[in-house]
Image 1 (cartoon, rainbow, N blue to C red):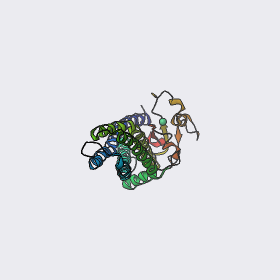
Image 2 (image 1 turned 45 degrees about the horizontal axis):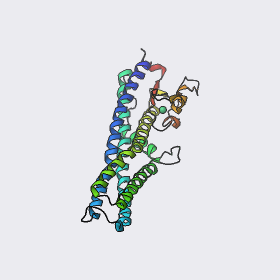
Image 3 (image 1 turned 120 degrees about the vertical axis):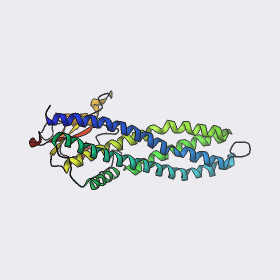
Image 4 (image 1 turned 30 degrees about the vertical axis):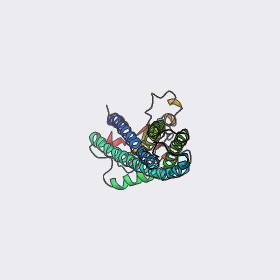
Amino acid sequence: MNSQEKLDAIFRRIANEYGKLNEKQVAFAIREIGRVRNDVAALLAEFVADDGTIKKQRLMRLLRELEQLERSMRQYGEQALNKTINESAEFAIEQANAAVKTVVGTTLIKSGIERLNRNVVEYVATRFSDDGLVLSDRIWNVSGEIRDAIASQLRADIIKGESVSTMVRNIRRIYENETWMIRRLVITEGNTAYRTANAMSIERSEVADWVRIVENGSRHPRHQQHRCYELAQENRYGQGRGIFKPTDTEIYSPHPQCSAFIVPVLKDEYL
Ligand SMILES: [Zn+2]
C-alpha cells in the first residue's frame, strides 16, 4: 500500500466512526427537542378540571399557549444542532490531523484550528439548501410541524372529552411519529459539517491541493441516482474521478442525509 492508499483506508474508518457519533447526535437531538412532551404535560396540568378532562371552553387558550412551547422547541433544536455541528467539525479536524500525521509524519494543518472550526460552523449555519432555506428556517419548520401535530391531537382529544392522562400518552405517540424529521436534519447537517471541516482543512494544508469525494451509501437501493455518486464518477479537472478543488462547495453537501466523505489527495512529494 502506498501512502495515499493508507490514508484512504484510515479516512474510511474515521468516516465510519463519525457515522456512529452522528447516530448519538440524532438520539440527543430527539431527546432534547422531546423535552416539549414534558412542557405539554405541565401545561395540561394547569388546565385540567376536577373530572380529569379539559373543558372545551378552554381549548382556544390552551392552543395559544402552545405557541410559547413552539418557541422553546426551536431553542432546544437550535442548541442540539449547534452542538452537532461543532462536535462534527471538531471530530473531523482532529481525526484528519491524526491520520495525516500517521501516514506522512506531519499534521494536515498546523495552526488556526479554532478559527477553522468557527468558519465551518458559520458555513453550515448560513448555507442555503435546495429548498432555499437556511438552518434556522429548517429548525423552525420542524418545530412548527411538531407543534401542529400536537395541537390537532389535543384539539381532537379535548373535544372528545379524553382525560389528561390519555392526552399525555397521545402526545408521546405523536412525537414518536415526527422524530424522522429531526433525524433527517441532524444527519444532513452533521455530515455537511464533517465534510466542510475536511475540505476547509485541506484547503489550508501543505500536504494536498486536491480532494477526492468518496461516496459512502452503496446500501441505498437508489444510490446510483444520488448526487454524490455522480460527483464521485466525474473527472472534472482531468485529475481523476471524484477529484475536486477543496473550495468546490457543491461537494460539501451533495444531497440530504448524504454520508459521502472527503479525502486529501497527497502531493507527489508525500507519496
Ligand atoms: Zn450521498
